Image 1 (cartoon, rainbow, N blue to C red):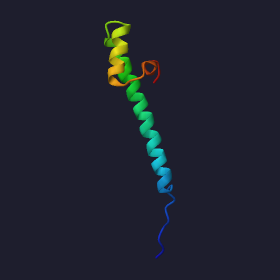
Image 2: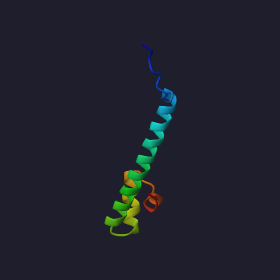
Image 3: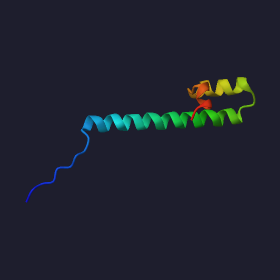
Image 4: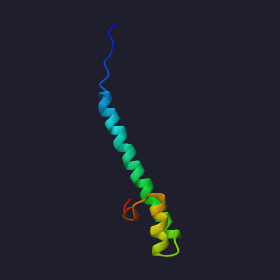
Length: 64
């Protein structure tokens, strides 16, 4: 009996792929959060302050 060898990427490549996927997910979540804040803010100053408190980039509401 022979053992089948599976060709899977090395652990470092899987880690890199997982990190890239997580960064993309975080970017999308932050953009959605920024848009939600912008939609509910009373004015631009309120929006800016809320985004700043949450540590979100105001420009991220325009992406994603």
